[in-house]
Amino acid sequence: MLILLAWTSGAEASSDALMDAIVACATEPTFPLPGVSVEDRARLLDGEVVRMIDRKPGNEPSAAVGMAVLRAPREALWVSVQDMHAQVDPSLTEFIVEHLEGDRALWYGYFDLPRPIKDRQWVVDSTNNHRMAARTSDACWEHSWRLVPDGLERIRDTVTSTQPRGITPDHLDRAIYTPVNQGSWFMAPIDGERVFVAYHATSVVGGLIPDWLVTQLAMSRLEELMRSLEKRALTWAPSHYRTGHEPVFGGDGNVVAPFSNTSP
Image (cartoon, rainbow, N blue to C red; front, side, top):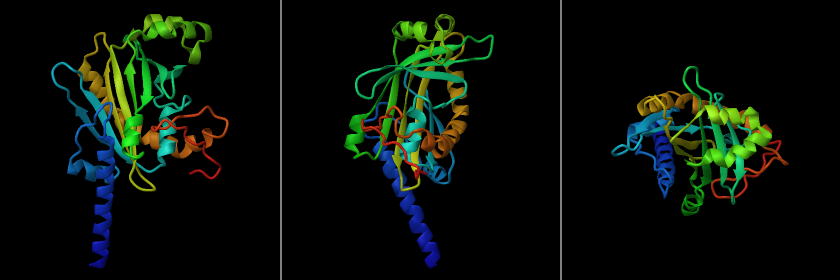
């Protein structure tokens, strides 16, 4: 009985800590997450990736949402999605086009699709939600991005002169510019070993591909997205983000300290 009581108390503590993390991530978010049920919280604590569609009113496109409890330090998870060298999705080519004030930046993305479907591209203005970090005493960090309507014109000179990551003016001319691309990453520590991570993304790719199909495709990739993120945080980030690397800013606007030789 004593063993059972101790296990129950630990389970309740974990559930309470997860709920605290979810509530922190609901404090003035740029893109609010949908509600998380008791059943979904139990699945998260069991190590599952919870996927859902955040349906919007009227004709507003729906968002694909993935949530997980990952076993890696938040700083390593954060670097694994924010570092300019990170490869979040092997089918995507991404790079920073321009650093804006503070920790804002313009990112270019190119999605190579199987023929005869035309490739897609976008430019987003990305930033961190300092207000959320301050209001929650750093309990949750949010990184968000929004499409820049005139993005191609803002990056054409850079692409023409430097061809970053092999992207040329020809790529800009032949790929379709997505009409909607926005979303957020949320990261909130639960305890010393686990972090609540959520991904909220809305995409409309234009052309003949219907919005519902894009959402379903995004949903199908969420499991792999979370698992690969956890792996990068445990293996790639600690050895990559070291002293001398260009700084990565945390959700509070401060630079994430480079990892040492003793980092996990």
